Length: 247
Image 1 (cartoon, rainbow, N blue to C red):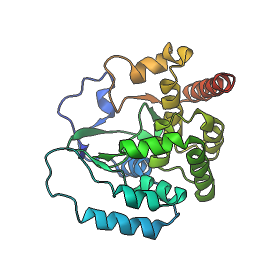
Image 2 (cartoon, rainbow, N blue to C red; image 1 turned 135 degrees about the vertical axis):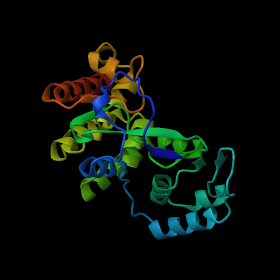
Image 3 (cartoon, rainbow, N blue to C red; image 1 turned 90 degrees about the vertical axis):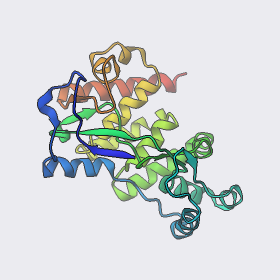
Image 4 (cartoon, rainbow, N blue to C red; image 1 turned 180 degrees about the horizontal axis):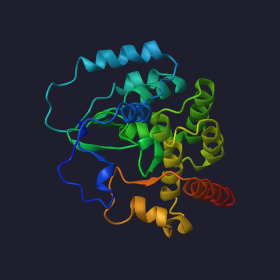
């Protein structure tokens, strides 16, 4: 369960004036809503939703431990590749009882965060779902890119999937998509996460890395948006792509 709200003590090295102790301003809430927005694939959507609805009726109420809420292996195997993609994107199978307390940050639209928001409320992809995406990395990347271009949006679940499968191959697309959608600064966050996953040496030695992933950082750590920071992230991502391409 994710608690979008307040914290009683902040000692994360970020400025106190940037932390929301009360309800966030409407424009800040709107930006958080944009960050949380998911993409819904169209492939066999009604069929997949029907399976999910049937499975939801079997789930325990008030479980005190994490559990796998996935459909049966037989039902999963019967889905086409594209339908499996839809299923994974709209229905993560692992329900977690862990609660994460989240603070609001003032003026988030002018910040670059080190991590994406949690994709779902207390749930995440199962090993089966992650393995499927990793084994079919190229096809998953292609589906995400095609859907993003077609719908002019890159949802939180799509961004998170690219990170989970270490989709460095998607960097040119992400850079191009960001140029057309500069308000979505979580695309920069996605690039940062790909840099971090790749253990890119130059990035790990940077001030930006230290501010976002160093000591005393947390899931809401940020840097202020600036043309200098933006340029550094873009150039670092380009360098990473070139390096990985030549390996």
